[in-house]
Amino acid sequence: MLKLFHAQGSCALASRIALEDAGADYDLVRVDLANGEQRRPEFLAVNPKGRVPALVTDKGVLTETPAILAYIAQTFPEAGLAPLADPYEFARLQAFNSYLCSTVHVNHAHGRRGSRWADAQSSFDDMKRKVPETMAAAMKMIELDYFEGPWVMGEQYTVADAYLFTIERWLAGDGVDIADFPAIADHHRRMSARASVGRALA
Image (cartoon, rainbow, N blue to C red; front, side, top):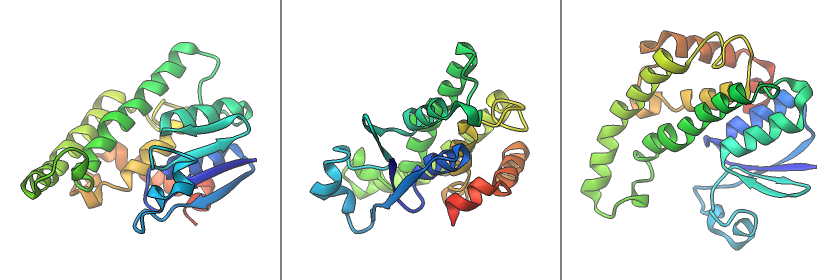
C-alpha cells in the first residue's frame, strides 16, 4: 500500500488530491513541521531532505512533487490524470509542474524560509517584501502563456491542476489577489468543487 507523508498547508496537498483522483488505496501520515518532526531521525530515514511530500511505494520512496504526480498518473492510467500516450504532451505537463516546483514554490518560500538563502534579518525582510511581486508575475505568466482552460492542459484534467490549485491557496498569504487573474480564479473555483479536493482537504 502507498503511504503519503504530508503536512498541513504544504505542497503535499497536490499529491494527496492526485491520489484521491486516482482512487488509490493509501495511508496518510502527518508530519508536524511546526514542532520539527521533519528533522527527527524517524522521518529523515524516510526522506533525508527533511521535507514533504514523501510517497512510500513498494519499490522505495519518492520525493519531489512533479515526480510523485507523474508516478501517480502512470500507476493509475485508467484515471486519465496525464496525457500518457503522447510523449510531447506529457513532457509539457512535466514542464508546467517543474516550473511550479522550481520557480513559483521557491518564490513563495522566500517569504517564509529565508534562512535557506541568507542569515541576516534584513535579508529576510527584503525577500519577504519581494514575494507579492514575484508570485503575481508567475501567475500572470501562467494565465497568459501556459494556462489553456478550463484546465491547465485544456479539456483534460490532469495532475497539473492539483498542483496549481495547491499554489493558488497560498496566494492570499503571499499578498496576491487571485481576482486579478480571472482564469486562475475560475480554475480555483472549479477545483474547489471537485469531490476529490473535498476529500483531500477534509
